[in-house]
Length: 435
Image 1: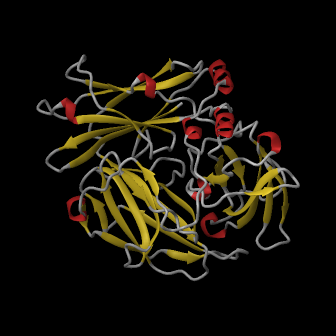
Image 2: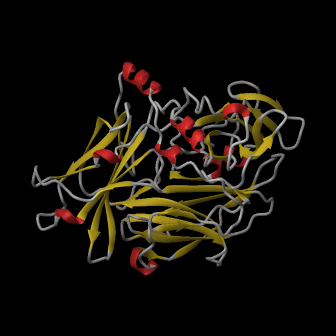
Image 3: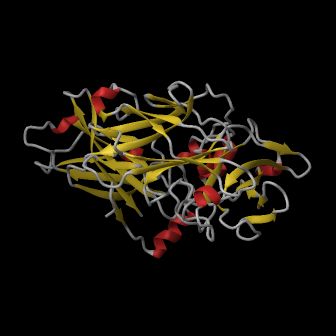
């Protein structure tokens, strides 16, 4: 059991893994239609929420429990492992920044004022920043750990942090989601394999049972939301409990909402910048270093086998032979190439998104007519990363949905209580299962 979130691991027989490797379907690819732009006013739209995009100067944002770069960002309300926020600004001269916190209901609509969910102070300054050490491309690395002596939370639930220029709340650099969970009720989780109408492949239907906090609590004030892997912006929720096993209650995701297998993302290991693996060639005589990733084909989306990064970049544990990867890792000018179906231009274009960019697509790739592929060069910090391509063209969306699925997935259950007294949704438990 890990601090901050209950985590179970379910082992699947080899023959089932082989079956999964042959199956198709991806909820992520259905929604993969963001060409992107680089205007700071553009926001990410999710049900009940609006999030500011990352500023172009900010790179490699990480938010996770301290010591666990791939874990989901959950804080236990009664203490436990704090969260580590780390990021780089591509400037050699650092400066203090401000951090703000917002409480949200389960649909990510910001609801309470700071005095209602925070103790001590209502914002803080990020004062821990240091220049990169002897790197070819200079940057400033920032670290912030919370809760701390200045920042703590009095209400559980969904949270959003915002980093902005010092004392200027509306001058936003980026925003990220995290959770504060009470972990006040034991929860049993079952994952059922089901067949959906029109699909020959098995989907995953989560089922949870727990006992309400008190005999006088109305079970219908609870709801449960489920996510697959790190897709926190599109949870699938069950609103109505079953009381068949009273005093325990049960919630099950509707069969038609069950999760089809996620298509495996592409994997890139820049821990060691040299040819090998998925790196075709490199040039360390230039500043910054350059690397060319082998072409990715629409016919063969995803990389298998690959480590399970859960949508995160791994820096601290991903750069061997470097004493302090946070400050000593190089930014590498990394060229990606995507070969579309028929080696022809894709209607609407192609965008690149990955863990190194917070899965945001800030601009379209460039069509190379001579080589019949799309290409783009991005500065990426040494480490391990996941990425994919996004488009609005239905033929390419379908091709990606038919790719090999992940062999490991994380299903997370969020148990919410509609607290009328506080006028918000409290988060009473979070349970994650990797299988």
